[in-house]
Structure formats: structure tokens, C-alpha cells
Length: 428
Ligand code: GDP
Image 1 (spheres, rainbow, N blue to C red):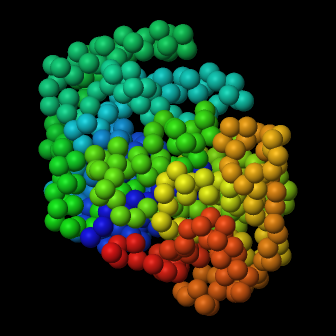
Image 2 (image 1 turned 90 degrees about the vertical axis):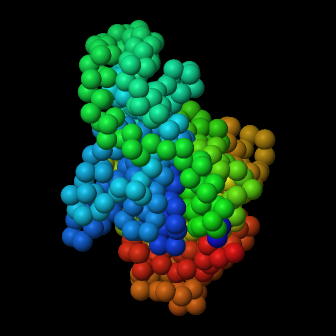
Image 3 (image 1 turned 120 degrees about the vertical axis):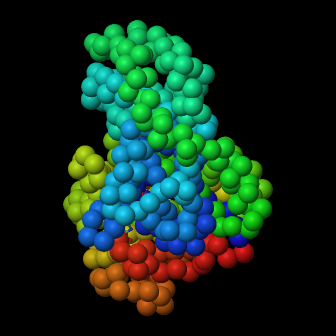
């Protein structure tokens, strides 16, 4: 059975929750390889909704083992809150949930710095972080003063690490008008959490290699999207971790030769949250219509997302840096009712016209559009490609041809069954 990587091909919010949920039905192991408690998936258990930000959404499938791999940053309190919320609703995570011994821990000073910085930044300079300490935690990792899950096993050593990190952050905290927290108080508060987390701390790279040897189906789930990737995104308006497929190998401790398929998720249009360049953004009533019909508002903040037409140079870029084998196109239903659908096919730049995504100099790039016919039919009941309106089929064909990647899945509504599956990702 293959290892399949799923990544966002745009600026995040592509509908990964739904697509990952579809695939986890077949997976023996579901792995999150990057990011922290920012990407929320809404899980529906009976009549109740639970938001998981750290635990892979596969936790609701009783046969799936779920791994928070070492590319992630984990807030111990958030993790235990999620475990308790799941337990309260009858989902037992014990024996099925693992956190890498090398995953870095988000501690109170990370959250503090994140909040202080975002409040201090001028409106125009806000990166739009979720203020959960993710960025500062990755900074500590790169500065080689981070605290890892394995350190929970030794609270004496932990105190030394926390003292070193708080001393390093103290000038920043003070300059931003904050109060430096006491390392001892942090470690005392952490001790009872540590006792509960230690049993699930594992060398998850060994766990994955074992699963590979047994021929199990492994799903590696990215956070955010390609254009928010630290290396390949629209820097500096990016996240602090790896959101591309290569990040699955680095972040999960699995070799590239083990990956058999990479699927990129894209909406039928584009959205972006927060600041940063977005060439195909629409400021007109069509943009407003996409926002309303697509429910494009932040799931936590309620903040309206920026909306625009599909950007094919950007998608081709995502196909290249991820090595995409298949596309999952979501929210096609949201385009229903538009008489014409714009698609960016190239850019006019100061150096001439290009079909490449000008990741540097994006601010000066002017999209070149083609206009495709729209359709009026509602789509959520459609289950086969042949039952889609001709214009919708044509739109999908245009996108697949232009990107040079076949479409595996078309999502025509938020529900699990509102999906057209064209290819089984786990088929060998
Ligand atoms: P993620 O951040 O990429 O994981 O995106 P989510 O999984 O949170 O998806 C964003 C929202 O889009 C959720 O409210 C989904 O229910 C919704 N959604 C996903 N696919 C579709 C679709 O095909 N059509 C519509 N109308 N909504 C969808």
C-alpha cells in the first residue's frame, strides 16, 4: 500500500479537511508533518462538532493510527484539551495517538511573544499570525534552543532548557512591554501535563518505517498551502514551516522513495487570508459573491477572506515544487451561477509576458485572463463527471490541461458524499 501526501496547492483553506477525511477512510496511519495548533479541522461526531487543531482528523476512524510528527510544533495544553474533548465524546485516543519525541513544544513564552508582536505591528506589517506561539517556537528550533517532546521525560533538564529560552526572549518581551515569565512557574505548570503526554511520546519515524514494511496505507497531511510555505511561498507573508510535499519527508522522517503519490488541493477559485500579494484578487461584486457563496470567512476569527479567480501559473508552480500527481478541485459548486469564469493563464511583468508564477516581483505582475463559460445548474447532487454541466466539465479539463496534472477528485459540496472520485489515491 502506498504512502500518499496531501498538500494545499494555494494559500491554505483549500478544503483539506474534507479531502483528508475522505482518504483517511482507507488509511492505516494518518500523519501531520508540519505546523501547529493553527489549522483547524471541524470534526462532526453525532450532533456535536469538535475542532481539532493538532490531532490528525483521522482520529475518528477507529482503525487509523494518528501521528503528530517531528515537523510539527505541539502545545501540550492544547493537545490534552483535544484528547479530553474527544474522550468526552466517546473517542478513545489511547494506543492510537502518537507524538514524535522530536516535535518541538510550544511553551507560554512563545504564545506571549506572538501576541505582543502582533499587537505591536503596524496594521500594514501584520503577517496575520494566529497568535498561538507557532512562529516563535519554530524560531527557537532554528536557534537551537527549543524544547522537544522527549524533554518532558526529565523535568530537571526541562528547567534548564526553559531558563535558557526565557533568558533569550527576555529582551524581546521587555521591549514589547511584556513581563518575562518565571521558568520555574512554567515547569511546575508543565509537570502534570508531561505525565499525561509521556506515554504517547514515540520515535514516530520508526513507527512509520514499520508501517511501510507492513505495506500499510499511510496518509501524510500538510498544513496551510504551498504559497504559504517558508521556502516556496510568497515570503515574508508565509508560515514558519514546510507546507510542500518535500516537507512530508523532512517533517515525518520518511524517505522520498517511500512516497508514491502527491495530491494537491485547489479550490475552483482562489482565496487568501491576511496580507501579502494576491494578483487575481477581485474587489468587485464577483469577489463578494465568491466570498458569500463559498462561506469564505475565517473559521476562528470570522474575518472575511480575500477572493479571486483561479491562478494557473500559481497552480503550475505548486505542481512543480510539490511534484503533484493528482489534483483535488474543491468548491466547484461555488462557481454555479456565474455567466463567465475568469482564469489567469499568464502574467504581464516588466520583463514581458510569462506563464511562470513570478514569486519575486508578484506585486508588479498583471494577470492575463481567459474567460470561460459558466453554468447555472446546482452541483451538490452530481456524483459522476458525465453528469456535470458541459461548461463545468470544460472548466475542469481546461485547468487539468493547463496545469498538466490529472484531476483525482472534484468536490461539489461540503458533505463527504458530495464528491466525484475519479481516481483512488491508494490504488497502486
Ligand atoms: P482547510 O483549511 O484546507 O482544511 O479547509 P477546510 O477543510 O476547513 O474547508 C473549508 C470549508 O470549506 C469547510 O467549511 C468545508 O466544509 C467547506 N468545503 C469543503 N469542500 C467544499 C465544497 O466542495 N463545496 C463547498 N460549498 N464547501 C466545501
